[in-house]
Length: 129
Image (cartoon, rainbow, N blue to C red):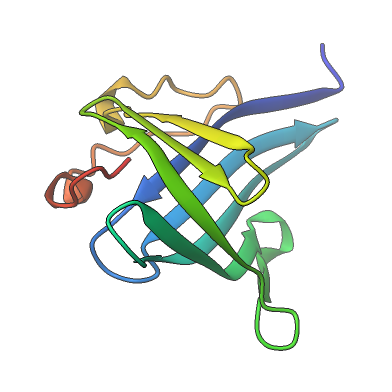
């Protein structure tokens, strides 16, 4: 048995704010946890997005850490490429984030025993998932 296990990270983009939610499921020894990061995602131009982090949450002990002034984190990203399957954005330092569209049904159940919902609410948000 492995001491630690980290599953795939998922980013869900919705129509309503906070628009973006990243989630990552982990296990360390026998402690399983899902960490979520929610952020506002706003278009500044046709190719520039501003992401403002709102809160980080942990399933373990129901911990929620809001990002409010003076510790608010904000970054600008430029959309380098976008099609029906792929989104590539770069931050101000040129570091890329490469995002691949995944249907809810195609998310593989985690080896941690987590269930995957058949939630279709994200279909209305263009470029979501």
